Image 1 (cartoon, rainbow, N blue to C red):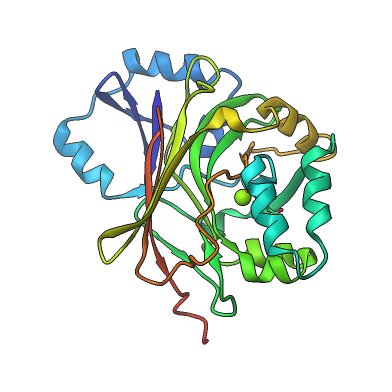
Image 2: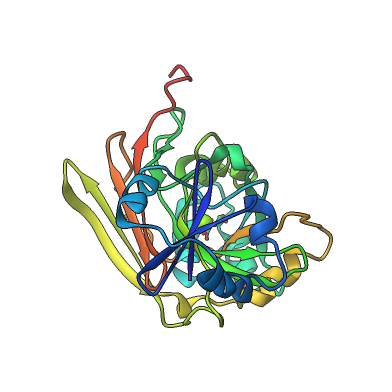
Length: 285
Ligand code: DO4
Ligand code: MG
């Protein structure tokens, strides 16, 4: 089942039918039995017409309320390789190798809801960064009692020049206005997502594809439950939390994003998250 958030409401997609869902977003998604609650709504809620859906689709928001967004890093071999390359000069390459092998995962705070963009909204690149990439990732939605209830598509926008200069600059490379994409929906399956599901990214420049690749999410070194266990060790999340699970798709080293690029990320079973890349107009270069 797929749950969509719009400005004033939520709607559910299930077997090609759509239903209006009542109630506030935080309370709705953080419930213990989300899957069975949504299943019940397909028998109790108003069905939406295709006209209603066309209006609601224009109004889609990121599927987030008051949740924090966290991220895991270096969970795939490809990410470890890319980070070791970019940090060679700074002498920090070993840190990435060590964290890939270590029992404790790399987990970092990525964004508050204000810094998140939804489907069709802009994502920003920093003006003080010369090397910028999107990171297509599966994000988990985990409720307050540490149960993985759903999934969405994430874009963990990153400045490779800033992180490569010194890993202590990670928060600046990762956390700034509109640096996190989430959407287009919260996918709530009865059982855990298919490990063979593929994640795919295409980057368009002047409507032409300048990058395209895909990979199966089962190439990840760590388990979803293992990441969640570490995240909840000393943190509470009263509204639940989104956790990006790391990237495995890294464009070649001579690629950097430009304003006007369009990034489309899809994950089988969830949908497509598309965002345009821009500079933050409120900040001077
Ligand atoms: O180690 C820095 C961040 C890694 C990351 O974001 C990723 O592997 O996806
Ligand atoms: Mg990442």
